[in-house]
Structure formats: C-alpha cells, structure tokens
Image (cartoon, rainbow, N blue to C red; front, top):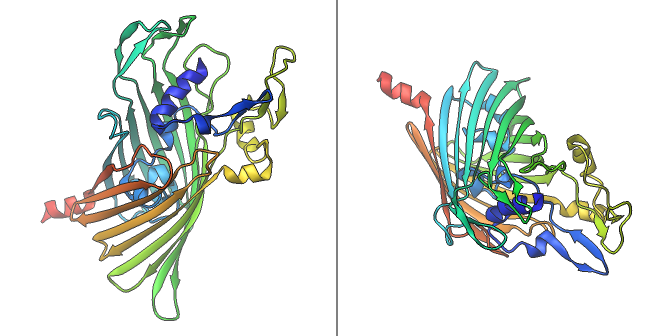
Length: 400
C-alpha cells in the first residue's frame, strides 16, 4: 500500500511508463529496484523559468528572487531590498489540462548582511477517479501537494554567505479514502524538513582589462522526517538532495555578459538492495548485495554514498549533471540554454532547455522550453513562465 500511494505521485510527476526504471524484471529469483524513489517527488521539480531554461541549474548562478529552490544562501548577495515572483509550470499538458505546479516566492533584505525569504509551492494532480478493488466508482477527487518554506540568509564575509531554511510539506494523494482489498484507511502525509546552503563568489579582473566573476554553491535540501500515508510502521524517505556546482561570468563589455555553469546533484537517500526472492529468513527476504534501506534519515544520508549494490560504478550513475548558459544584454534582455543528463538506469531524464528573459522597470518576465533527447518528458513542448516584481523600482516610480 505504501508503494502504491508513492507510485501514484511518482507516476503523475514522471508522466511516463516507469517500468524500465522502477524495477528490474525478476531473473533467477532476484529482485532489484533500479531508480531510487521517494515520497513527494514534486519537491524536486524546477519551479521557475530561469533555472528551468538553463538545464535546471541554479546553485551558483547570480542571485534572484527564485533562489529559494536552488540555493537560499544567494539571497545575502541580492542587490535589491525587496521583491517577489510567481511561476507556473503546466504538467503533462499534451495529455491533460488540470495538472500543474504553482510557485510563489519573495524576499526582504533586512540590512547589508541579512535577508529573509519565503515561498509556497503547490502541485495540483488534477481530477482522479477513485475505484475499489472491484472497479466500483468511489468518486472523483482532486489530490494535491504543497510546501511552505522560510529561510534566513546571512553574509559571513565579503565573498561568502550561508543560509538555513525550514519547510512544512503536505501531500494528500487519496483524500482520506480507504483503499486496497483490506480497506486500509489513508491520510495526508506530512513532514518537517530543512535546507542548509552556502554560496561563494568573487570578482575577477583580467589583464586585458575585462572583468568577470567566479561563484560556487552547495545546497543540501529536504533534510527531514520520513512520510507515510497510512498507519504502516514503515515510512518513505522524502527527496533529500545534494546540489553543488560552480559558475563563471565573463563581462564582454559594459553592455554584454555571459555566464556558464555546471551542476551536479545526488539524492541522499539509500539505494535499494538486491533481494533474493526465492528464500525467506525469519519472515524476511534476504539481501544478496547492497545494504538494508530501512534506516534513519541521517544514516540514510551517509549510507547513500556507499550502499549501491553494484559498487562505485553505480554510485557514479546516481549523480545527475547539467550544463547551463546565460547571456545578458544591458541587464535587460537574456537568452538562455542548457542540457540535463541522468543515467538510463536511474531515471533516464535527458533533455535540452531553452529560454529568454526580459527586465522592464518594475517587473521581469522569463520563459523556458524543454526538448527531450530520449524518452518523453512531462514538460515536452510546454512553455513555462515566471513573473518577477522589483519593489525598489516600484517605490522609485511611485516617488517620481
């Protein structure tokens, strides 16, 4: 039952046939899950158009109002006092029209060193018809998930900042229905989690007279308690994730600049072991290779670096990498692109992204577009957008 509820969310997130990534076929009484799955995978969706158009990168790029998802420590370097943004991403647009991710975020700079920020992420799974095991209609419901996050970011030195965030996660997949042959009662899953992040950046002066900037970001997101949708003793991990990468900006002249970034991400949850389904020991299926994944959250974070059944080579496959590039003209118009790569055995998400941005007085508008190179992606042929508001510019116009 736990797996079925988690799979409902994951299937809607992926919008794909997951059989090849979810489990390996049973061969010689051996069962092996391939991809690492967690509860509330909507927490991993890139919520804004800027990061989404750069290969889903953002841990080390210049700070903006949507830094909450990528690296909250960047807020300490933001040069405006206050701003907010609203984003929307249609999901599985070619199949349905009522699934989507909404994202609202804002920040306020207390002084030169301190910034606070908050965000609301809401994922609607659309209308779903529930039936019992015999196929009888139990009604149409609208499952949904959301998270509320707050962060405090502080500048430690001229070039280094850090941030801590707290978030509440709510996932209501069954609307309280009793499901399964045993009419198991279900409830909404909830979790409390935290993010810890750092951000370093330093200007660079070249002998040619040109200038630039080097930046490095690290963010460990969604460190929190497991989640459950029933009264089962076992619970599911939420998607704790490590995100790390550098970014380099080159100022071509006073009007033109270009930024390139590379980013690596890894889920800090245990890798499922390989089970021998042909035998039972003390009413348990013995593990052939790998490690027991029924561990605590912090043990799972540590274990995730060395528990892959196929050793170091499999650990490397669990690392997703992405490239992003951004060109700005006069800090008013931007063109962006990127590439995202994930191992075929760990999800197989491979796609190119494109986008553009425009800044005009008090507001900015960003677009992103995604093109898959392998299997279909829920965001194929979908235009995402983010609308940002600069309250400093608004106040300046108002005073005039």
